[in-house]
Image 1 (cartoon, rainbow over the protein chains, first blue to last red):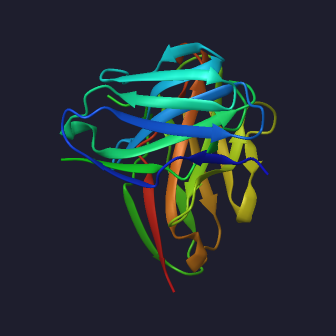
Image 2 (cartoon, one colour; image 1 turned 90 degrees about the horizontal axis):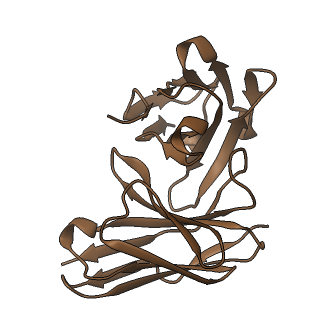
Length: 113
Length: 114
């Protein structure tokens, strides 16, 4: 069974704080993804990584950065959290791109006050 | 405008009713199509996917979807729903034209009344 875990289920942060969201997968997947999920907007891709130390911008990368130092771990960083970054953050991983199924973590619900 | 559209945001129906959720996309060229489901309190998981062959694909839990290329559609169907099908359903498209990134629709919340 593929397992994708995220470091926190719920987080409350203040505006301006630096926020780290961690994601770990145990299936040796090449690709990892960070999405945010907002009502009515579905999932929107923030960043993805297809290899260690490699990253690509998704559709909404502004205000975020990522780090992938090890194959199994993909971190999302909010350099200076803002209230409009209050959202549900989902991490996913997949073996390949294109036709491959993505496996999702449980999500981190972030509230920025 | 979103490139993957799900027509209904909320659907309420009774057990044993038939379900059809619409999904349309705007990409030309090669596409791979997915339906994901998120049950209350659970991870998002794959329901079914299509990338070639028979345009009618069957997934888990009695769901199926039909790819109609001429209509740019990939509608999800289930002939008879159960209370346990209460969930949010997301259509997603991986398109060459979009750099092979997965693009999700806005989701449809389905509530099945017992």
